[in-house]
Length: 593
Image 1: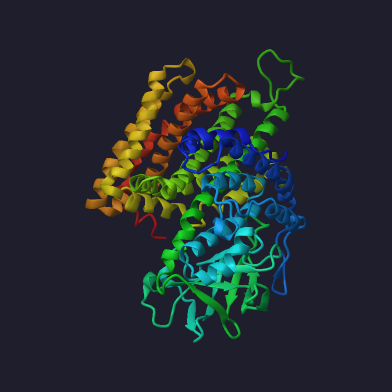
Image 2: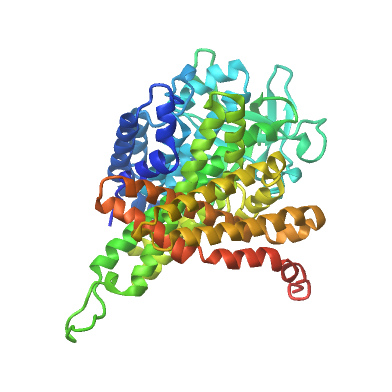
């Protein structure tokens, strides 16, 4: 079964649930219209389904072989990438001054879902370039912008992010890469970086590496890290490519999944030192890199949605094709498609509902990020930025957890054939497993949520979010539509559990921070269930007000299923947050060996 982009559901979520239509009506995005949004999504869906998806399984088998320092991408990938940049997809959100279209990030996130559903190994490549563009546009000198941004924005060159070293993963204070001034305004970069996505490939003529390194007199810890631009090929004054820089791919990792994404060990400065240029201020590299990383976390979150969507589509198709078992009244020599069995129905609806909730959270995060830059007044921009800050850990962690869970359910629906590589179900699970790890592990996202985001504006930001969720639950209850079932009651109970856990968490952060950290991960899951449930309920309210159709009936059924079958976990999660800290912390004896 090949992936088909669910353009209708994507457009509905983006425009109605996440609120893009509201902002289009306000003129927040200039002359951008709903018709243009739909046209962009339709064409992106066609490209993802017809050009990218067919490359997925062959790319998984071929991998990214390395020979003499050069990576060869799978057959067909270079041609597909050339069509992709020809279609203008690389420049979708790029700054207009450098050839970009300056369209909303929310629209880009929707297209990124489709690229990653077609092939997660393909979709992750452009993501790093988007981040590099933002980091350079925000922090680089005018000279660097003029030299590198036009080619990055067009997609003719690609970018990378070089943080991790063998001894420095999540703890960048241990970083050892060095940068020595060369006396001409450039720096000599030396060091080894690992886990570098698309660190070497043959899709573009040049690769622009953004590298964290320390200056000779830098203070210790994360305060002594600077950011440098280090191109694979130096660029001449006329914009043509010059000499090869002292940068090479030392090896390509053999990984569980995303085999067609080259994950490289990069060696900088084995000979005379790689030539690099400072981006931003000395010893302020993390500030620059976080510009890149925050949006990259949302892009990784949408990878979770993308792989879940693909796994769900394949499981649903298989469940309609595979005949096994009988229903009452059938003879012994008859069999029904397994979709007729209640447990398979439950599994498929769980996959569908979790995917839809994660999609809604990611799109809401993207719209809030856009409004943080484009709202008409400072108060609106501040409120939108705080909402984006609050939702980003949810978008990254909840969505990537869902990607793994839904992909695993997809294998289960396939039964024994799901464990066989030829069906493709196993690849989705293998590919999905990296997303909860990279761009900040999901445990780190939970810690960030409870230690930094709950305290924004003295707690007013999270209170406003919970208030918005409560408003949706109230509207559902007031609608009293039979198809909504107990949706309003279940949402109310979920939000009650969230408020109880939030009150406890805020107090614990002041009195016993370790207790708060012990409950961070279940708290993130709890707030995501409340947020996802309310988002789907908002969609159900909108669908109920539109013309009756199978698609709108499915949206209402999905929202009700989530509220009545997924949200009841909220009470248990709240109890884990409030009452489970001691059992987490008092484990030294159990974990001694």
